[in-house]
Each structure stands twice: as structure tokens, then as C-alpha cells.
Length: 127
Image (cartoon, rainbow, N blue to C red; front, side, top):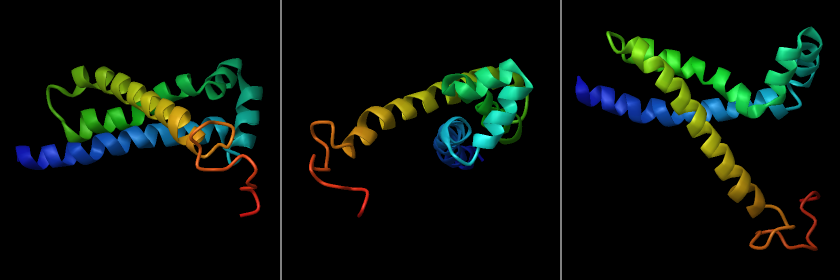
């Protein structure tokens, strides 16, 4: 039983971190949710601030995997005490993932930065 929980957690935790980061990026920056962001910003200033801030949005997005981990995967007397630390953990780990991708991977493909795989005079938009 313990071994299966360990394997499950080894899958769930990294997947949940990527889920929080990906969902946050989709909500805050993607073209798909542009109309939703416009609608939300008209509805209430809180929603405008929430959707406009990736750091804030990731806190709210982290609630979903924290509920799953705390109340579905590890039910019992530790469910509620584990919930808040799980939200903070998923939120912070998704921020670290975002920072890593932003600082290292994005610049790796950007010709303006030294060490990029793209040459300065190379046009990457036309394939």
C-alpha cells in the first residue's frame, strides 16, 4: 500500500506543478482566453487584478491539485492540515518552474541573448 502511494505521489506532484504553471499561463497570457480576460475585467476589479497577475492566479489555480492531493489521494486525518501547505507548495513550485523556463529556455531560443541557438541574422519566422 505504501509503495503504491509513493509511486502515485511521484507522478501526481510533478504533474500538478506543470498543471498549475500551464493553466496559469493559459489564463493570463494566451489568446484563447483573451475574451474571458476582457469579460472578467469588466465584471469586477478583483477579477481584473487576479487574471492580470500570474503570481496571484497561480495561488488560485494551485487550489485544485491541493484539494485532489489532500482529500482524494491522501484522505484521512491529515487531509485538512495538508491542504494549505499543498497550496503553497504547488504555487511556489510552479513559480520556480516559470522562472526557470523564462530565464533559461526562452532565452535559449532568443537571438538577442548570448548562447542562443538562433543566429542573430537568421530569420526563424519563415522556417
